[in-house]
Length: 395
Ligand SMILES: Cc1ncc(COP(=O)(O)O)c(C=O)c1O
Image (cartoon, rainbow, N blue to C red):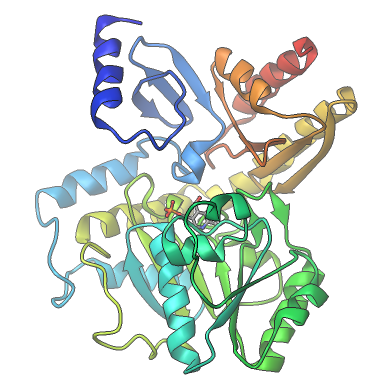
């Protein structure tokens, strides 16, 4: 490690909370699907920073929107209007369903908003059913909604009023419905849970269950939204619409922004004084997000994600065929793909990293592959060649 690099890690060791397991690499620059570290080494990013860099690093339009806006206005409180937030809300609604948007700064906050909305809407009914292996964030409400015991460990007692059911099993959800249930919340594709795709039967079954019992259907699209699956939102692969949808990650093209999209029927619930976010919907983040939607539309990135998703899937299926003793299943939609391994996957991730390919492993044995929507066939050939080499040399 260079002297400059040692200085960086020393600062972290001394001053930054050690709540993340760290890879010993210091990034300095990114463009598109590529990242460079402080020593000039180039990496191929097939993970997009947990899905945040969905348009790749430093997308041109986002960068110029930020540059442009930063000289004009960064923040005004939400008890005034700003000239950008309304425009972004319109863009989101036009791409989603009729309703209103609440702006915040992260996925967990978007989820907290959905939880508060469900409680206040149903006046006394306060239970929310979520799915095992879900992930909704780290704040107390979002963490409680996350039905993974390892994530709750040490933080008990968790919030009252959450019930857990089995993903893709309508009957298991039905069993949890009581006279106190107000909402059902899940991810159309569980990301942290191991790239588990909701079946059409599940999606339709839960929608009917919600209608039958007057429950809100909340879909968490923090990871699956903004084109990741080849549609703007993953629910659009199914013939249903949610009552509430949470967004963050790719929404800002690298800038922190979250949103809770609330259908017309319940948009009145969070009236003045019931909910707020100081930074939510600031002009800088909103301009970045408008540029994200413009880029997706002008560069036809949804189509690109569908085509590249198919190509990547084909390559990963071939990988499974060649290493059927090591790979159990390839699954996912568009550019949100997982490779379930027979054994643990951290070794594969670090060997890929040695060859300058960034991927991730979740739930110990699912490799998560989520390149930005601008990925090319050449990038996919390069990444899958590295994966093949790593699998071939794995003992
Ligand atoms: C589906 C889902 N919801 C919520 C969150 C929390 O988002 P944030 O880390 O921005 O709070 C995540 C983060 O990974 C997520 O994947």
